[in-house]
Amino acid sequence: MMRFTRNQLIVALGTILVLLAVSLWIVRPILGRRKKLAVKIEQSEKRFQELIDLERLYRGMKAESGRIESNLSQRPRDFTLFAFLEGLAGRDGIKGQIEFMRPSVKQLSDKHQEEQVEMRFKGVSLERLIPYLYHIETAPEQVRIRRLTIRPQQRNPSQLEVSLVVVTRKLSGAAQMVGSKEA
Image (tube, rainbow, N blue to C red):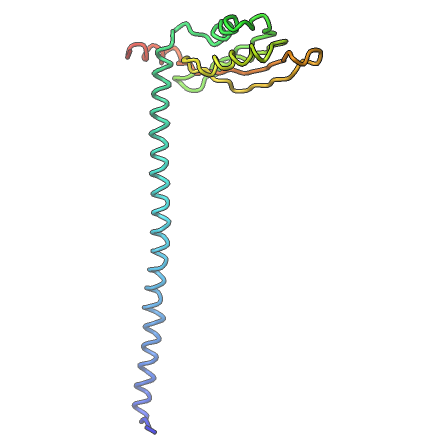
């Protein structure tokens, strides 16, 4: 067996201690930092992808908003949701079943208003109601049904009681004038 001198043992032990110190205070922190950076890079890439997706969504919504605003500016200036719905009910043969119509307007922004009409029909048949609802939803005037409740009448189940809220957006007075100048 080989015997080491005291100096050789001290040098070997010192070398081991230096290697341990380098490992603990230099190599491990570097590797740990590198691992943390890799995780942060991965998180940043995910956030970047989310931002790209949000930008795509924003551009799509902006294009849709521009299309809707263009349609709104091309709508006749005297358009009212109340008159539109009443005329449509007359055309579809259910004007006589209108129990009430309650219009309201809410200011959404400087440029936009939301026009809303709450309606109730009494004693309307499903065969007459479906075309009316279809004509509302497919109208080029950007009209939508927000809420719809249909119940059969107690006396005559083939006749319906219908409550609905119909909405549309409208350009405010100043925005409508600007829109009409651009056309």
